[in-house]
Length: 156
Ligand code: FES
Ligand code: FES
Image (cartoon, rainbow, N blue to C red; front, side, top):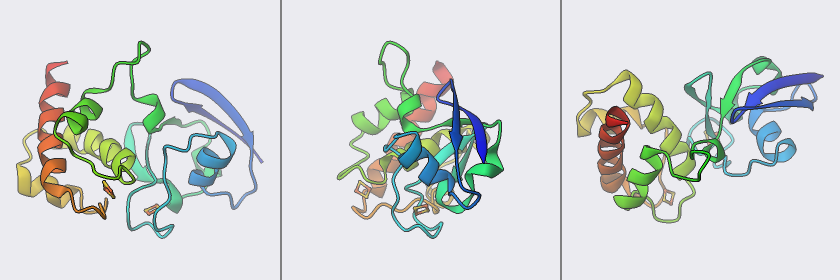
């Protein structure tokens, strides 16, 4: 089946089998390997992408379900001049990562949660990020990064 998306601001058209997962289409056909696969069972959040601005787990949904959608992966966050998105910069500055495996999903989930919860305190951020697992247990700095990134996004 032919599926058309806008991926990181550019049109993309790919042929997929009806049972192709969105994460497979992103990684294997579009070659955007910043979207990771951790569990493949919708638990870890490593595969999180934004679909029409909302964070979803791309291992848990079929590519054909997103015909016409605007998809943003971690590769699409930086500005055209290469400047990091404020949330990416905050993760870097706050050392909100160790091995980095969870980081693309964390950053995309953080961007989404900040839009809906502009006043979330640390406890609320931890609750909202419960679908994203960091195996390096860097949660303290991740929460710090989300707070800093949210402020930077609000000021941008
Ligand atoms: Fe999708 Fe873990 S790989 S939630
Ligand atoms: Fe290693 Fe989160 S930084 S899994």
